[in-house]
Amino acid sequence: MPKKNTPSTSPNRRHFLKQTALVAGAGLLGFTPACTTTRNAPRALGQGAPPSPPQDQETLRLAVLGTGGMGRGHCQAIATFANRGEQDVEIVAVCDVNDLHAAAAVNTIREAGQQSTPETYRDYREVLKRDDIHAVIIASPEHWHAKMAMDAVHAGKDVYCEKPMTLHLDEALAVQKTVHNNPGVIFVVGTQKMMLPKYLEAKKLIEAGAIGKPTFSQTSYCRNSPDGEWNYYGIDENWKPGVNLDWDAWLGEYGPREWDPKVYIRWRRYRDFSTGILGDLLVHEMTPLILALDSVGWPTHVVATGGHYIDKEMENHDQVNLTIQFEHDHTMIVAGSTCNEVGLENLIRGHEGNIYLNSRHCELRPTRPFVDLIDPQKIECPDIGNDQDQLRLAWLKAIRSRVQPDSTVDFATKVMVAVDLASRSMWDGHAYSFDPNTMTASRV
Image (cartoon, rainbow, N blue to C red):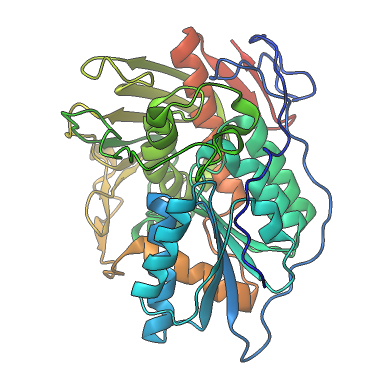
């Protein structure tokens, strides 16, 4: 195929009104997005072309959409799997609005041992038109996840979508519905820790009634970034909007605006493009815990606080604290920080016993009134190595077997309820509720 590397116009560019209290047609009562512009609510896509998985003895052909830091990490991992003979897979296309990032991704793939050179694109829609591509990895900034994911499903591709699955809850609901409308697709959300055996062991214990009713859980993601979180993404003076970088395409529906290299490369620090600690860090801890606590249902009430305690320059918060109630009488507390690395113990409390998850293993200890009725136990869990690699491998294997791995659209949507409502709560000071029967959110 000829090389595609010409400027593209920004897909679905829209003009926006000032922020309002309700996004028309979103189905979310009292929906006030965390960003400073109001978006048109995304529509779930109906049934598209069914995926065409590779045939026996056929090489799995992938594309990577978004080749910044995480995208290049995926490129290196996938090419390494192939070079080691672990998977018969080839990256045949990479796409980025930044030509330098795309070129760097190609170099990464070649250095990892792939002999062929992927085609480079600026416009992901051109990638999705290719019938020879089986699946795509989406590693773009958060504000592009939903559209790319739904377009890929509709184009008949299996999808690995980086976390958070979307930037906003209405987008998550649209992606979830799109995936449900296309039950043949293998759709995985790239959340770390979802492959760790201890969470599945905890799920078994909880659903067997080993701790009685699960009442209270806690987790956190805390680290200390003296120079400002995400400032370690360096600015390249060789980036030239209009020459080798399509800034308008990167902005999408959040443009137009003046070129700002800090926003471009450190977008997690900015309210329009990311929920910061919530979506980038806490989802890694919350999602596997929600997997273990699947029986408690959906988040139904969220209140959160956020502060700018050390990093005054960052628009998003550097300290966050969440309280999340679930539909079947369970409360989860979550802490996140980029100004202190000491977090909370990973712990699930039940009426009769507690499950400790801070180590690689899953440990059950009875609560004091039940020590004579419940025996303590420690379930030794194997060291699976790099859990992110294990999730990548699980997705690649699933494309052939058509058996969906655990990191599903439904768990990601549950997490997005918590993330989105927490973000709203932090910015406007109100609590929020979610009704899983109507799939609507409202301010309390």
